Structures are given as structure tokens and as C-alpha cells.
Length: 366
Ligand SMILES: [Zn+2]
Image 1 (cartoon, protein in one colour):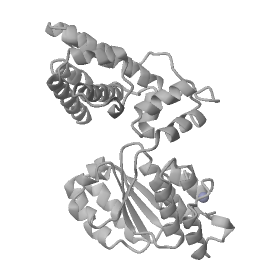
Image 2 (spheres, helix red, strand yellow; image 1 turned 180 degrees about the horizontal axis):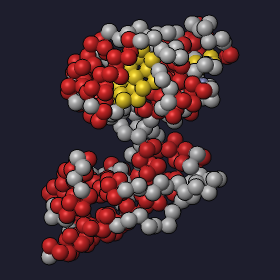
Image 3 (cartoon, rainbow, N blue to C red; image 1 turned 180 degrees about the vertical axis):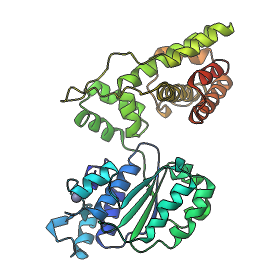
Image 4 (cartoon, rainbow, N blue to C red; image 1 turned 120 degrees about the vertical axis):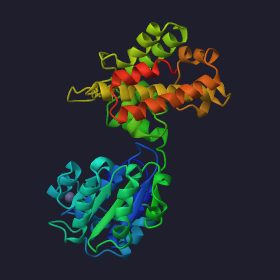
């Protein structure tokens, strides 16, 4: 996905394109900002701009004669340079199959990361630059981060590093101080709504509801827009109501067990063309429960906000009247405690605790 197809963040993308065109891109960068706003897509777009074989410049300037043209384009708010998105290099970068563009994940382990980063010293195999994108860099262990320090400080001449971080404050200060940070903001609701209509084929009402619930995150909007997202919301409502009434342990377990109900809902929305549904059915119990816990957490957070007497517009989700009525039965302490319990349940799930165990535990925490 070239720069021009990334939604929002025009100032940052303009800057990246200009720096790339002028050969003035800092070699180590942090892309920070909320989940799902396009940080990783921008990193991929950058890798494409650095390696596209048919790179195009503003006004049709040949790619090796930049300079003034790049500056002029940037001042006009245009991209000085952009990848074609179609050549073999662009396509393989988008698919994660280009030998010079590496996407590294925090769970790879230090040896794998070290081996990968060692290749930064090599000349690119076929492109112009080797690009290392560290996804969720803020979740990398301190040991891994430490092992990167020297490379980030003095990057080999033909390599670039992008650290993608939702919570950059969790990066080691020594890592942060070596890399200029570009902050990606939340996307305007109108952009998300338009994108859901134009690219995902949602009707106006669904696009609006999902955009409202998205909190400026396109990733979250897409999840909300899916049928599974709708089912999750309904189940969360049901679980909270059932738990409110349940006293006996068996009743509580049964109520919380609804969170593991398989996704059988009829798709609420259908994508344009292809006859493909906009939802991707959660592949496993674990993923499904992860999605449900996210919805439960979001609902509890908003209920806490309501209970604290904050204004309506500070709510991130579109709460139904039915859910709102729960504020009368759960006091704010219980809501806050429940919210933090959901956070712990999410962590347990990530640590591979079985979905059933997580749900059984949660039954007595809400
Ligand atoms: Zn290309």
C-alpha cells in the first residue's frame, strides 16, 4: 500500500516522502500512536518507496533528479515521491516476501531478532535499502531492545529501521533517545466513515455506527463493522445482565460462559462485490474470546465513564439504553474493578491460559 492509499496522517506521509526523495530520511524512526490508525501500513509504504522499481515523483520528475521538486511538492502538501504499488518489489513488500524488507515481531525471541539485525550490515539483495520494521516494538523485551542499541545508534549505511509502537513510553529511554519519533494521531471519524462506505461497502448507518465506536482507529472500526463485532456487543450485554442477577456460582459460570458462544450470527454487513462478507469469522476460541473481552472491556470502561458523571461525548462506544441501565446496578468501584479484571483476563489469554479457564475465573470477578 503506497503512501497515497494510507488513510489520514497527511503531514507525516508528506514528510516521509520528502525525506525519502531527498535521501534525508533518518535511518532509525519510531512510529507511535494508537492501535489501528495505520502506523504499520505507513512503515510498509515507506519500505515500498525505498525499494519500488518504478518509483514516481511529483510532476513526473525522474526519480534521481529530486531536490527542489520534492520541496515544492511538500510545501503544496503533496507527496514528493511514491511507490507504484504494482511492481514486483512493491507487491512482495506488501505480502512480506521481499528479501530486503523484514517485519520483526516481539515474540520472535532474541536470537532470531539478532540474526535478522545482523544482516543489516549487508548490502541490499535486490532493492535499494534494507528496511527493518519492528512491529509492536513496545512489547519487545528489554533484552531485545538493548541488543538493538548499537545498531540504532549507528545504522549500517544501506539499512533503515522503523519501530512501530502503540505505547512508546514502554520503550527503553535509551532506544527512544536514538530514534526521532513521528506521532500518528487518531483518524477523524469522517475519514473512517467514508472509508467503510467506499472500500468496505457498508451502508451509511452501519458505517456511522462503526465509526462512532472506533475511537479513531480504523482497525477497530473494521472489527466493529463485522458481524462478529455485532455479536460480541450483544453477548457482552447479555453477560452483564445475567451476571447482575446471578448469585449461585453455577449461574455465574453459565452467564460468563456465554463469552465462548461460537459466532453463529448472520453477517450484519456484506462487502461490495465478490459476495464476501465484511467479517472474518474468528478462527479459534482464543481469538473469539479475545474479541469478546475487548468488547467487554470497552463497554465496562464506558460504563465507568458514565458512572463517574462524565459527558456523553467522552464515550468511545455507542451504548444501548439497555446497557446504560446497568450503571444503576453496578456502582463505579465495581465497574472499575471489573474493567481491570478484564484486562487481567486478556493478559492471561495472551499467556496461553485456556479460554475456558479464563472465562471461569472472570465469572467471579465481575
Ligand atoms: Zn513499485
